Amino acid sequence: MPTIDADLVIAPPAPSVAAPRRSRALPRDRINGQPSFVLHSYPYKETSLIVDMFTREFGRIGLVAKGAKRPHSQLRGVLQTFQPLASSWSGRAELRTLIDAEWVGGMLPLERTALLCGFYLNELLVKLIARDDPHPLLFDQYVATLNQLAHNEPAQIVLRKFEKALLKETGVAADLGRCAGSGGSAGDPVEPGVEYVVDPERGPRVARGSDTWPAVDGQTLLDMERGDYADPLTQLQSKQLMRFLLAHQLGGVPLNTRQILIDLLQL
Image 1 (cartoon, rainbow, N blue to C red):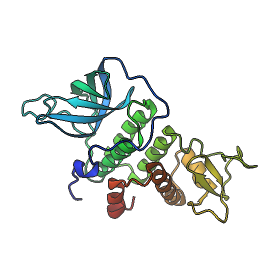
Image 2 (tube, rainbow, N blue to C red; image 1 turned 90 degrees about the vertical axis):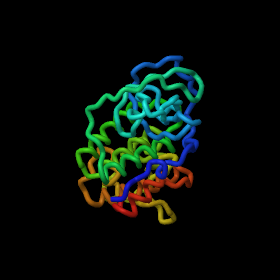
Image 3 (tube, helix red, strand yellow; image 1 turned 135 degrees about the vertical axis):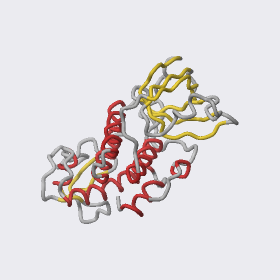
Image 4 (cartoon, one colour; image 1 turned 120 degrees about the vertical axis):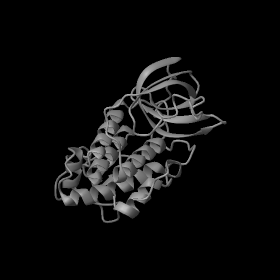
């Protein structure tokens, strides 16, 4: 497995593709001990960093870590990806000031394939989650996913579960067990043995002969809805479906880590 350079995986700085669902007031001036993870960081001026942080209660935020590049800075060895932190910051601007970050511990490090999958998760969050839009359930799913990857659970299944959770949080694939949109089938339960497509803006509907979207069996959608990926056909079709839905959400913006995973691991 080649060494992965985080700066090559997520190019700094790119605006989020997904727009906030609604405007939100910026949080209060001082936040203390917030559960958080570093998604990405890049140099700022001579001795500082700008850190893209995923927090449980405030979502994805931008922080200036002043002096973090100095040799004796307490932040220098702490601001690492995939390490659980308790972070404190101040400010109301789009970029707040990081005051402190403490390593919490309790998680195994990611290695080899799991490490590459972790960078894939981070890239998804940077490109699909708007700043200052809280997603506490997605944060919990992110923590669970990192733990599963660290314990060598099947990456293909672990990633599909996270992708689905992410799309639900951004308003896509809200209920894969029922047909959506207009027409006589709207609201009907999805049935095994029937082919469906998933409209990126509405949800599942019965497939038509003229469709160019990937068709999946109704059983695949039902399996995905309850998080059961034991069936090989569900694994195959869910991978194709998630590639399609993510590509739509990204608006043509490529995922660097996705291509690496496809090339090396067929994930």
